Image (cartoon, rainbow, N blue to C red; front, side):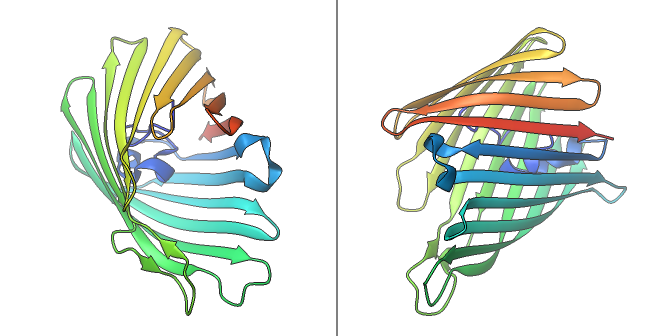
Length: 238
């Protein structure tokens, strides 16, 4: 769904908008992997876990992008809390590092994320997320820069079979990216997903499968110049 996720509530809210975790009632773990443009050097993997509790919902995720001679690592610990039946807020503390083989200095930075999700009407969810509110360098005498990123979006559930989503993605000094997605559930355990995004134009297609407390997905995204990216995810609730 073109990475739409800022106005959702599921396990992967731990990566998109941690405020969505507040509406979860069961512990869960998950794994995600993609190979961008079919290049193993551009592989991305993520592990996620969610634990609901009385004070709120706690989440954790570890992301790894790249290969042995160049890679980025991000470790995050999140806390999400309901401010009412239809409003939730979150904060996540992150440690980010970037490694380049042979470099004297590599990017290392501690930062944080903020998120809000509201349900202003039945079947409508609105989300806002801010990553790294204070942009800047992450080391001594290096040019590496960790930007601020804002996301704002809505998701609308049309009856029980169709969900529509649209959101904006804005990185400091870059153009706004608009992402749209649709999920169609023709039968109870099976979902079909589509997505389109701008800057540059790209599209995605995927399938989702639900069995008891198991969630699995397979998707393909296409960049108009660089080609295809296969993706898969797997999650279990307890």
